[in-house]
Image (cartoon, rainbow, N blue to C red; front, side, top):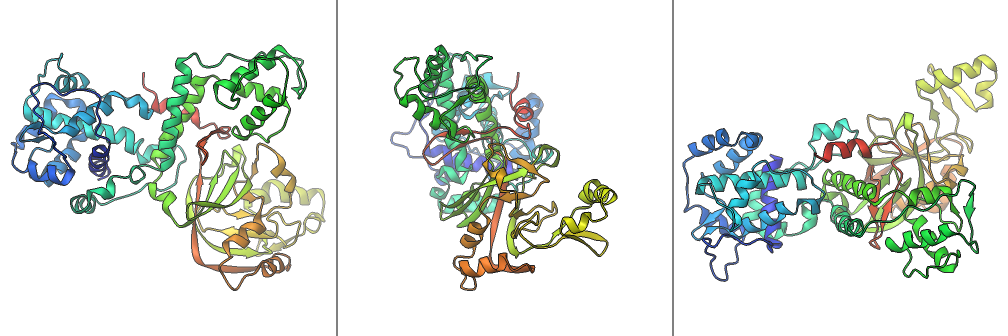
Length: 532
């Protein structure tokens, strides 16, 4: 009953922000000093019943809301068909707050429109006629709530997100348990991060900043000299003036001295820009950097909105776990988080476009030292067998052997899995591992694997994971990694592993980071979100 759940969360959250910008009609008489909380409103509603048959008539009159009928029926059965939105003084104050939020849906990156908005306007705007009866107003507001909750708190449904390749679990809750919690302690729900993953709210703030930039005209394109390889410190060019203006608009450059020289101020701003746009920081301004800077603000806004939607799919409990590992595919980064702090960050290599890394979660259960690599049948067919036809010593050269009809690579420093792998059992057969191909971690774009995740700091990750386990010192970890004999160790405490796909991210400094959409998923999602 996710929609009903979201309805009552929305009520609790809304009370915290009850500062609606629109005025109720003058006929609405507010109780002086009324401080309406959800549990108090529930008690008052019991005095204002309505005929349940009116609900059936309502949906005949307003068929575009019929998809909400089952949830609305469940809500009013819980309240024994008493009014929720009315007390003895008229429409409760939070109705005004909801109306204000619906009017400002674009703040939430939502373009959907409530199908009977004009009817709702008549309830709250003095200059418009209210054509709804009391009970019609009641039911219309409940449907309005469900519409708001569906678009802002829930987002696209599970089947759609799964079709988009998003297999991270979405939170399931008990409606009755939630209602009991609200009755006993409404304050429990008056925290924003109890509704949505906290990154959502950070992106929402940045969305407003970028819309303000858009209102001021955005940024002008930088001239791209076809003969240019890169600008370096000390160079002068007309385009450098444009680069300074571009970085001043988005805040990397604090002051624009409006000179055409690549000076120290610009150098600092360029490095800052590169750090937050998936680039390896360097002093050169390449053609690639200029092309990225020329992406219009409208496209950046769309990217933020797309990732706000992805954040709607993530349980807010995600960031509350004491210890977890998260891999964000577009940023090519792994982070080990403990008690809300980043204990380890490592570059990673993820799946290439033809063998994409799956977006899902698992529980890190054990570590394998000096692992064998059991080759997938697809690699045996495409690489090993053709190689054996060309060279009868192919297996020996690659330190491989037959094992029960399959091919495996023996442990050692040249093993494709390196010296260690981290297993979180899953049907996708994806895991994290070391690699002998260390040079790949020096590249900006690191989508080269067959789907598994290659870790740039595997030893450090193992040390951090096992740091509180007396069985494992760094010396013992090193010895096991170089033993040449496979061994495994089951963790005393399993660790959640989340593999996500977010092409924007607001860091702990409040800076927006943009990453390449390596699997080309942003535009497809944007098409589903942006209505005509």
